[in-house]
Image (cartoon, rainbow over all chains, first blue to last red; front, side, top):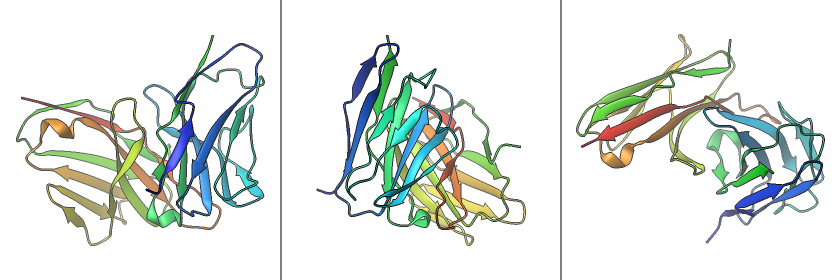
Length: 112
Length: 111
């Protein structure tokens, strides 16, 4: 079955640590996206990539980094520079933006 | 003004009720519109696209008014399983752009 897989489901980070969230898709989609969702808030765009080896900052890119070395993979690193990283992180992929996206099941990141 | 605005609710309705959600968007260049459903602590899932002519999928009807920059979702004969948050989503379809999400409207259907 085609789909988009995020791991881990839950992640705990100590202050000052970098952590990397995995996102893999086998839908053959060119575009991939990372969103962050805080309680009671909408989804906010962190980074997106329209094609391999290219990516753009979204609305809240500070404190995050990404890479897109393979079409199937778009990992997100939450760096120590991100001051408030506790949130629900959602990865999505899509063929064309006017077709909508498919989301992964998300990663819940908590700073301890 | 926020790009996509929705009444957060919650909307509390009995089973069988008809409920309508509204959404306004600020970018007149927006070209594609969607409703997503998000269950508690889960990822959003595409419920339906919204077309200018309006479209229906079973008990769900979506309408778009481009002149007023307004989108609606009507749910008829509400079921307990319809309880969720409904996200209004827009995009301008330009290369290099992404979907823009509203904060969502929460629906609770009770027996």
